[in-house]
Length: 111
Image (cartoon, rainbow, N blue to C red; front, side):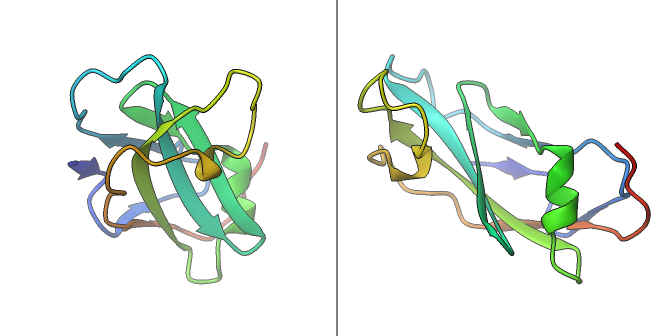
């Protein structure tokens, strides 16, 4: 999977950050891309059928003092429509991408 932004891309506090990657081909009906961003309080998990995902603005508050956040993406199988969350626990349908990083710089973040 080709990931962007490139490693160590830098962003200002007010920037909207969209992570993007190359598709692996058509997803099956029960397959989803699952994006994972570990942070100080656990992990931000995003689920999408598109090859991009916008990082929620509040993640800026969870970044470490270095501002560096790591992210990866995998294709996972949604076991049931009745299982809304915990996408990071869905069965994996292929290898998880290597972790990439970005740096979200310090400053004042206003909602």
